[in-house]
Length: 277
Image 1 (cartoon, helix red, strand yellow):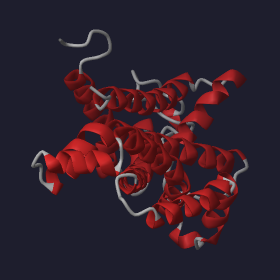
Image 2 (cartoon, rainbow, N blue to C red):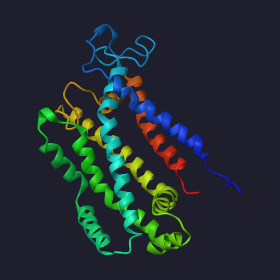
Image 3 (cartoon, rainbow, N blue to C red):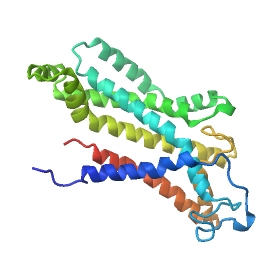
Image 4 (cartoon, rainbow, N blue to C red):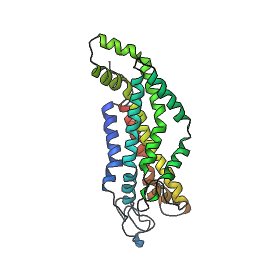
């Protein structure tokens, strides 16, 4: 009987694809540099400078959104895929009869998990040469630091299945190793955990970039996540929050918050689409 309650999987998956497409595909068309300023269009609303209005110099906010997407898209997706892959490894180790590899991974996980994430991330960001700064090393560092949690959760799921005994039981029924591991273990049981962990990492990396860039903009310092010629979604929020200082930048704040909201919605939709049966 079909389970009642919750969003339909296909609908949730479709909405997740739409959200990710709205966020990341436009980054492929991001301009290398912002358009020249047009002071007569300073803080122009969308009705005067479609489709998203202008900044304090009359440059289109659409270019801010496009460049911000290009800054976060690939690093965030790669970080999410890395966490997902390591989570799968952790789950499969829980189905292995040998305990040595699992003990080594657990030991490394405890060491990595004990490290202060933000301190490690800032150290990595500062070690990257200024002319080569990008979000990618920061995102991958965050993924490595987040992986132990995903691996532990996936390992716990495998343990609840019965671990190696579950594998042997399916083999006794004539199932091949590929079907056991790819379909029954990864596809049916680990999928909700590892995909959720991966997409949450994508969201965390996006928010991390916004946070680091916002601090840099606020202190008029070079960004740690992108070049000086690029703009982040944090620039939209910084410009938008000036509306509370009687600056007519409410449209920038609305755009920045909308982008953040779409990232969060994408995470919710993906989690709903891959939930356990």
